Amino acid sequence: MRLSKMYLRTLREVPSEAEIPSHILLLRAGMIRKLVSGVYGFMPLGYRSLRKIEQIVREEMDKKGAQEILMSAIQPAELWEESGRWAAFGPEMFRLKDRNERQFCLGPTHEEIFTDIVRSEISSYRQLPLNLYQIQTKYRDEKRPRFGLMRSREFIMKDSYSFDRDWEGLDKSYDDMYDAYTKIFTRCGLTFRAVEADTGAMGGSNSHEFCALSEVGESEIAYCEACQMAATIERAPCVDEKAPQEAELPLEEVMTPGTKSIAEVVDFLKIPVTKTIKALLFQVYNQDYKYVAAFVRGDRELNMTKLINILKIAEHEIEFADEEQMHKETGCVGGFTGPIGLHDCKIVVDTELVEAKNLCAGACKADHHLINVNYGRDYKGDIVTDLKLLKEGEPCPVCGAPVKITRGIEVGQVFKLGTKYSEAMNAYYKDENMKDHIMVMGCYGVGVSRTLAAIVEQHHDENGIIWPMPVAPYHVVVTIVNTNNEEQISLAEELYQELQRAGVEVLLDDRKERPGVKFKDADLLGIPVRITVGKQATDRIVEWKLRECSDSVNMNATEALEKTVVLVNQKK
Ligand code: ATP
Ligand code: MG
View 1 (cartoon, rainbow, N blue to C red):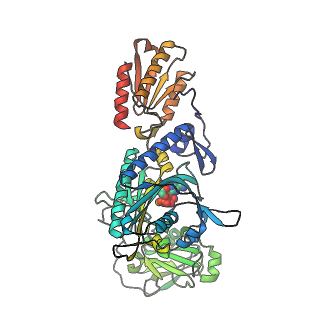
View 2 (view 1 turned 180 degrees about the horizontal axis):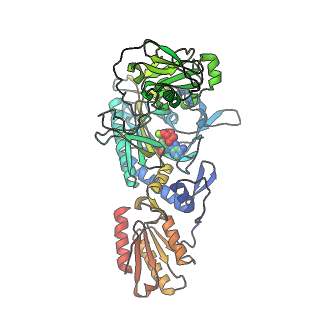
View 3 (view 1 turned 120 degrees about the vertical axis):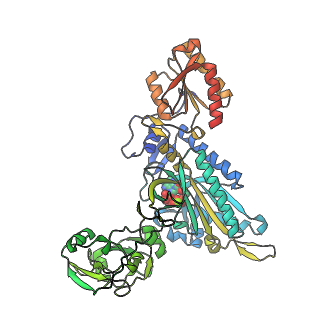
């Protein structure tokens, strides 16, 4: 492709909402363009890289025997009602009605659709196992679309669904997908970790997230260098700190004026923070109870995912309570709430509080706290569970060594769904004896457009993108320094033709621009190899440079050609 003819507009400035390198660079390099918040289009170079990622995904899926189909983005509400997710999905779902008032959504995911097609067309064990996938546009009305392709409202996902006879079959399908994902993200040039993950809105028993390591990632990962433990912190269990052995002292109410925060109480009563109980108050929706009070030790942070999971509710069905309103109905008192004296409210207590003796908690009375509060004697939880958020340096839940925490971008996730959807939607098959059995399912997603952003996040410098060869929009850029010089033009043209003949994807920068502009653009676009044809064209000498290295070397044009072809074939 000749850059003089190419639809490409690079930018010097980008809107201030672009905060992270991938968002800034993809906009600056003219690879993506924003339509509205969270909705982006792909320009020629961006679309080429995107298609390369898709192709890598396709090849690795096909190698595992998965078969590609394409389902519609528009989905009828009835299928979602069957699975129970029409209500459960909440405001993230884009919903619409047709002219006859029939309800639809723009698919945020496709479990229902794939289960529906398979239940109506698969009847025998002979047709199983089956793994179907698609690369398709998904819609989620994200609360906070941001970071460009990273969290958008319209995005491209590869989603696949496996159907097996039994759980052993699912284990094999899951392992296959885990292996395919490892190969996909390796080929994309990503440094990543597969970590145990929460199953969230998908349901099911078992899950791994594939996280590209990055400071800007929204997934927090806990891992242990001593053993192989790696999990999202949402999922990671916490070890209770062993409480000192003490006799239970009599419960006592004390005046603690104005001490609304844990820090203030600790300071006022001169007690260690580990001797306090922290209350977190929530209102919930669509349940037969309205309020939840969660209690953790004063120095701990509540893990919302653990709370949501134990309550078996969706993320959008819970929010911080309006304390004044909640006071009227439950007796809580903002800043002075403890487990004693609360009513009409579900009480969820962290396991660590059970053994700990003589703690301090709010008295459910303004400016008062209770001391020597003991679990069992003074209060009980409706639920007792691990509610804690794991922090750096705390003991690993598997081996006890101090854990590390790092951040990652979730580029893929695999789930063992089990029979959640097949049961709800009656997906059965007949065995050898014509006996009916439920299908056992898995689902597997790759964020294709997010992967594009994650690659840029890991592969860039201050001058622009540095594409790994397999996903580079073009492999090589041949830059003509002076487009008025016949010798330079003719040597560059020769290289351009020869490289293409050898199967290399080449950009020819034949624009009538200053060389500085061309070099800047080449760096910004991140094409892996640059061959510069300048003054020494008379002697057939060119400058050969890798985008990832700062040095360049002069060499004979034929040598440059050969070197490039070898390198591209090796790395693409
Ligand atoms: P997140 O926790 O980031 O919201 P998710 O767990 O809801 O993602 P999945 O349902 O597992 O996402 O979807 C499969 C993949 O699709 C994710 O691993 C991610 O790479 C990608 N993805 C999900 N939401 C978005 C989004 N809003 N924009 C871009 N990619 C997304
Ligand atoms: Mg996910």
